[in-house]
Length: 124
Image 1 (cartoon, helix red, strand yellow):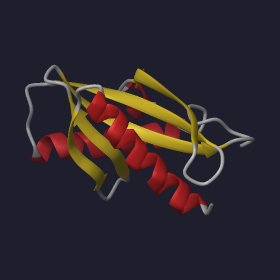
Image 2 (cartoon, rainbow, N blue to C red):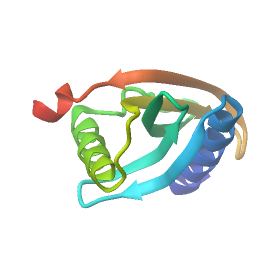
Image 3 (cartoon, rainbow, N blue to C red):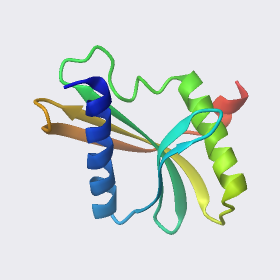
């Protein structure tokens, strides 16, 4: 499975999973000049900016590890722009959803880390 296709499959899986957990999807693939946020979701208390990392079984780098400081800065800058365009009273949070896949279309495992990082990365 091509990596772009793997990523799209992972994002579709992420949407289903998060909706089942009671989250409402506000945006998918929100782009700015700084970067992209895969999913923007809400549970009524938090507005969550979610990075979805889908990895094939046997990958050298896991999903959480792939969210580098540089990637965090881009997500934060994009989230700030989103909040300027879409003001919210909800508390912002940055989450990472790591998905492990095997054969095409086969999800082996997932792990959802809430509050994976904070805005401190933006200032480093």
